[in-house]
Length: 335
Image (tube, rainbow, N blue to C red; front, top):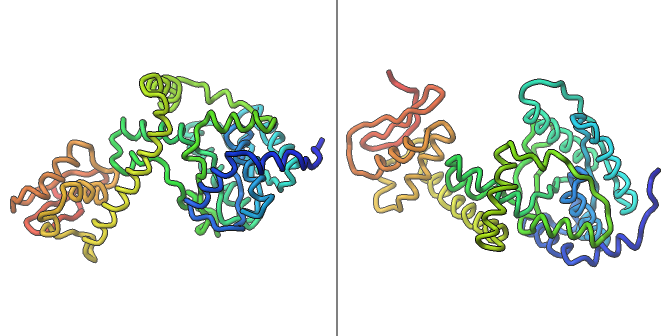
């Protein structure tokens, strides 16, 4: 049974303190006044809170709102998750679009489901005319991402965590202009769940979020609680630190990009009297994820050590980073 429009709920969403914080997150991410957006809603507490708070913003014209929800078909409860989203959408007077995926079992299911979900979200955004898809990733998610990146040696860019906005990662025709926007990165998981309680809106629990046998599950349920026990508020502060790391990385990468020649090489003279961070960033940009940590640092040191001796640093995929007397470049590996 479809729920009736609930004007009192819409008013409560509009007046909730977190609505203003979501609005600030949209502004930081470059979403203009009156823009048409689509919330990606799973039925969980985080996206349910974002959906409700955005309905409050839509009520006074900050945005035009639609909601997209995807039934992965992997869990037996996923259809009920989408139904929960649809019921709340009716109460909020918001259009809800739904897609059901038909994924075969087998290896790589999680990755295939993620790709298919983004494609489905992009398709729905195009259908409703939204230029931005809003995701409810929050400060806790951000810290999880940063800690996993730190453990994997992902560099300053990885330490920056998730950006507030980025192109939607899919190849759906016509989706090239779509943006994935995360307006809740400065909010905690607890605050979003509390908003659901304040507004008396129901959400669904995904039991896979309680797993402790995955890297993210271990970080979520073991590492972060330990950090919070050492320094209360670590999650929020780490999210801000991630923003600084990301901004610093953008600055460094812009400098390195300006140093690159038409063929992608960089003159070693450009590194004279420059901060060592530029050489390290250059290696990260040139080698991308095709070089191990120890080799990265050896290559960065070679760039600035003043030696004119040619040196080669192996990369995966049959390439190498070549540091010659006058230039740094990626080229096919030599035997």
